[in-house]
Image (tube, rainbow, N blue to C red; front, side, top):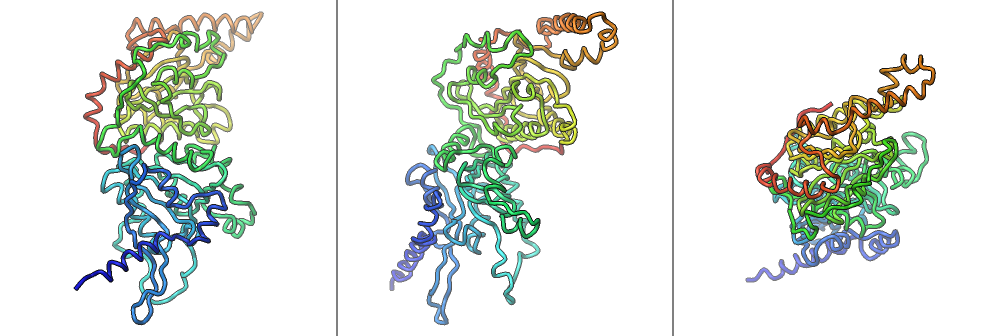
Amino acid sequence: MSWEQEVREIERRRHLAKQQGGKEGIAKQHARGRLTIRERIDALLDPDTFQEHGRATATPDYDDQDNLTGYVPANYVVGFGKIESRRVAVGGEDFTLKGGSPNAAGLRKSVYAEHLAVQYRVPLVRMLEGGGGSVKGGGRKGGTVGEPVFSAPRFRIIADAMGQVPVVSIAGGAVAGFPAGRLVASHFSVMTRHTAQILIGGPALVERALGVRLSKDELGGAHVHATSGIVDNIAEDEYAAFGETRRFLSYLPSSVHQRAPRIASNDDPERMEQDLLTAVPRDSNAGFDMREIVRMIVDLDSFFELGATYGPSQIVGLARLDGQPVGVLANDCNVYAGAMTAEAGQKYRRFVEMCDTFHLPIVNFVDQPGFMIGPEAERNGTIRYGMAAVCAAAQASVPWATIQVHKGFGVATAAHYGPDAYVLAWPSVESGALPLEGGVAVAFHREIDGAEDPAAKRRELEDRLRAARSPFPRAESFAVHELIDPRETRPVLCQWIDWIQPLLDDLKGPTTFPMRP
């Protein structure tokens, strides 16, 4: 006796599950300019590497004779695949069914995605497009409702995953409610510029609750979240978002139990760029391009910036030095002179914690005039978020190199030095308790006000004190490891990369943080 009939039924159900919302539902998705979840998975992964889990998971209907009369596939697709030959877990809502709002089978598979990644110690990529829960079907009586009281909290695994494996979330359409919560529980998140929105509650809910009528794009489009901190990057389309996802994961290990992949570099570790000698103007108040400085020092074309338009006075990103993935921190003197705002402090802390979690060494380029001041800075709680950034740096466990490029003033400067930091100074650096101009105005206000020419007196005092802030006495006192020609920065940092290899071997495993301000 054969099981052929049952096997044919298995194959039939697998076929039905792949039909998603049918031809009409798929056509509507394409008409909106968006891919289906299965098309997204295929576009992200290496060809023919997707191994789906729960291929026949569905919400079935049976007649009195137990014959299958209806079959609604789970509207969440999940499984393994490979990116650059490395295994990942990938999953996402099927918007062609119920607009991505999870049916019972789909909800179970969505919760399973984090468990799958953590169990097998592989990165998780979420492709989000859905509206979370629905009130439909909530009025029926009979049967069991809710979760058992002994169930583990649903969000526990979402939180735990962030301490175990890299998590990436991609918003390719409208993402609201529970999926929006999932999106921000990520190490890297990206949304498409023209087709995605991220919302706590959609237009109908907002209008009913608050009497405010706004479109989905007005509530949570890319122009909103470019500066909200909800997503890290904005991609022009879904294919660009997949490219950014692949690039982000290339810098990270598969889990905290592995090292980040060091690759062979075609860039000479001894390369010295002549333009670094003139990159910082002699006029201390003149701006310059810190991103270009970073690009000239790290491996060619390896700098990948995150969150450029949120907290823009602080620059964060990933790069490689002699093939070793590193986290990069820097200041943009063209935004608030590089001062740390509340938003910049939050971005800074979160990035340091990510590098600490995945044991990425940090390279920090300093041009820090201090915490942002003024009434708006006080209302935004800048000192709290700034001190959280300082604490994250002070308690970091990863190797840390600091390049003193230009300014270094006040408490905020402490955010640029991890424990046992390897400190290099450029001849252009100027440091102290306060920026010179403001400090002179405070400390010598009587002398300046009483002078025959106050402006000339202020300049005289500033010039005299600036000479005392030269980096040479610090180098003579061994207050920095080396005072270097800016052109030497890459060779010296590549030497440091070799020195820290044994330290990186010992840093595998989970990292914990205490409460911060």
